[in-house]
Length: 450
Image (cartoon, rainbow, N blue to C red; front, top):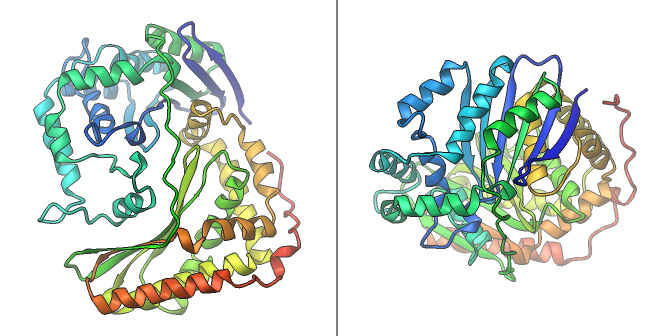
């Protein structure tokens, strides 16, 4: 069991501590409400570039080498990632070095030096090139899919931005972005470790108490709803084609958020779930197939993806449509829901053994005001029935909001065939759904309490 405490510093910074006495490490997670959805076309990629540049040194350690040596000499590891709606910095450190680790991390935000910009621009440029073909076209299927799902909105921008923007960014741009977003009221710090709350909170206060208060970054709601299916083909010479079947979904604050998460588990949570079993085991259409869901505050995206031989594309897409359509019409079986409940409960229970998982659970939840414990989340998930999942499937797998993306084969006949499959999917879903197994609520399995 863990003990959670929360407080605010005088500057408005939210601090959450999670005490687990058995741990042999402490994890400090700093969440900042800024990402690609807070950018314009001209500034796209600036949040990601700033995240990189914050590792180039501080006033006390004015180079990347000196900064990295300072962190690693404590036995610590520092990582960071930019997302669509927030940026995360995570420090894993020995408990007896927590105060020193927090001090090093705090200086990243209070006294960065932004050294070697040209060097870091070259590194980010290489990262961007990984997604491009020789003509500069984005051939990352996930990027193309997000561009279609969030067409006309900053959520569709690539997180890394583009090389032209990165080349144009100056230290003035970095300083302005830092001053606007890396402020106490737009951040939260979560510490998971074996120390008492007072000791962990004191380390955070000493390191982050000098941050300016600032204000929370406003987020413009998504306002470009989709009303008809889209098919996008990006020609790319390769032995396989990458395909994505994607739909916008209600967001994390919607009443259907938990049902959408369990819908994902019914589709793809192990090799016995529907996607892998039917596409890989039974039909041999692909080596690997996956599904994912990402829920922002106001909108989300549900995606199924695979890499497949060109000759198998039509069969694979048809099978995916059949699987999704069956879930929307009939819902999952009782056994599928019970399995999804059990695996979800296990994942939440297993957080107790992983301080990083606890930090990743509590940090974004605090940042976006979704405060909840794993035990509370567990009860919510176990309360989702088969009927709830079927209703969520009917909302999510709306044929008028289908986005079918293909990166690879550019065959007009194949495109026509995919269009015909999309029309049949629409016709099937528009028919009256049969009343079946999902209409009777499922009884949650008996699981040990946490």
